[in-house]
Length: 282
Ligand code: GUN
Image (cartoon, rainbow, N blue to C red):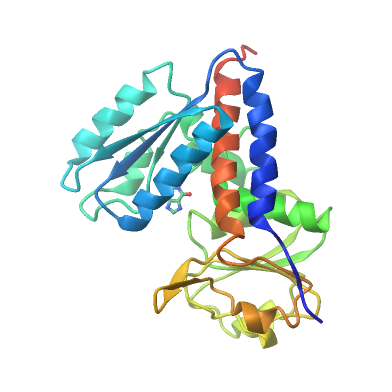
């Protein structure tokens, strides 16, 4: 058996087309502000992709690039300026931040109704209590979208998530639970990890260890979603050993071309949502 590939690039392209149609109907262009501190190479590329995606959809996007040595006060002062600017609908601070900055403290400065990354405590709290008004982080939302498009109703399916980060594992666990999945969250201290993943209908790998997931970890026909972005000898690869696992999985995402493009599209979706929320008086 060879797994069917879930084409994240194509799904993201279709979603971006739908978003562009929605944006055309508005009388103003939604605006995303991206704050990038320092010169992390991957972050610079990610943010360039976000700006291009926003502009292709008909939104506007500014990257506010601050020097590596910027102080907490300088970053917070920029956030306050953007919070108070009615032309700005969404604000994100690209992670990781330089070590001397407290990311929790900085994220908390973003007004909740502009927190399109959904990283702030308010939006996290809404998501964890199954409140529909939450901004949900883009990567978990992208994973959920791909699962729904591929499998339909996810009720009762057992998902094993590898990784408990605030950006992926934890919000994804809540999102799946809110949609009636049975969820197991595993991490670096989990015992007998392959025994757990082998029971899963869906495995989501988000632990940042190159090709750790092998075919003997996966039940026949299971769906495998790879959130990892690693490099081996300069070549991009995920947390799943793709060539090995595709022999047993029913569906599998590739790296690149899987979750990555969906993350960017979902951030645009959140920015459009922010615009609509801010311009609708209820
Ligand atoms: N770093 C890795 N993923 C993300 C993301 O989704 N948003 C931001 N702001 N930074 C990240």
